[in-house]
Length: 205
Image (cartoon, rainbow, N blue to C red; front, side):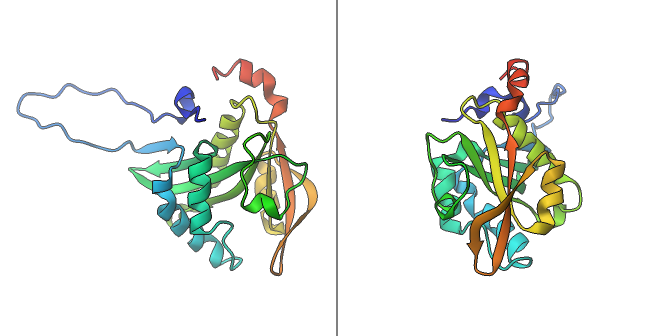
């Protein structure tokens, strides 16, 4: 169930068009900046960005290509991509979860009746890093989650060095994650979405 089309801040911005004078051909241009849910057709672009971003740092990708396709097929409405002139430059992929803490099943399962959004991955293309795009994308994503009436919170797990980044977006440390991947250990973090009922009522959602 996708509700993206009902949300004004996820629509591309339509600028005023100037009349086309006789003799001038209409040029087909892509929006300079667009935010939208991802689809399985975006999976390869997603995985290329993810692989470059994570392999060099931790040696592991949060999602493999088949898992990217899996989540973009089951719950595309819980993803968000940032496109510049038609090119994917940053993205988030999430799914629903139905337990208090993440466990190994949360890495591959989508629980349609869950009220927790598990954010699997946020990644930015290497040529667009150090520009604040990750923080902006996360802010937009959390704004979007506030408009989904069934979502109560968002959770993620990250390595220690990323904790300050997510704290700036409003996430709180819950403690060590029960999940390990090889030698890697993680911190579980949470963002309360249900506490923003007032914003829901006044946001046009």
